[in-house]
Image (cartoon, rainbow, N blue to C red; front, side, top):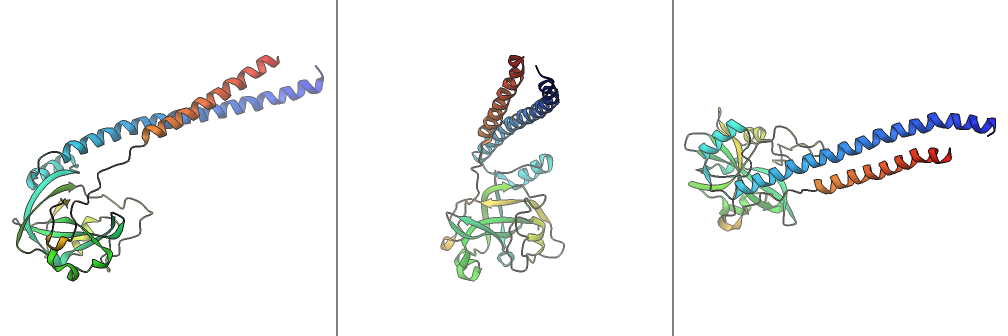
Length: 251
């Protein structure tokens, strides 16, 4: 073997070793991503099971749901029944879509017998019916009983991609419970129940708002992601093995 060939071979060994190390690091990263997706899969399956159990359980009094929220911080999708009087002048409008139409979910303060308030998502209205005067029949008066699903409050804006809430125009792009309540014209020193309630499908007079708009069908694609990451790791492992065996054959 010529001196030049030996020199080239000597230079290629450190380069091959570096490529192998980088490949090994990438292989471990792919394995870690696949394992993380498996963990997420188990978490999502547990969450979906919990939601299914909760949504198919009997409605509970608000006092029980509040106690559970104070204890666990999580009552999402728990059926609840509450009685009070709507303060329609305090409607807050959350931008939403329903069955392909753009519009708003109407969040209305409900005054409870103990003097507190809870924000009720009464349901969806089309964009051009944001003005409550255009759907006056649905502005029910007097004491009402609402059955629906408890929803956890959001601790912060869920995504930087969402626009900021336009409080002046009464258009909310994320459910900032405290700001919704503070801008609803509630009495000074009011006390707010710490959860939302999404009303069920019970029809409102005049047909609006349309209740029962809670989205429960959560996507679960973690298995496909896990298979993808593990598949890439397996392919990379095959390349590394072939690369290791090639020098041995050449020698």
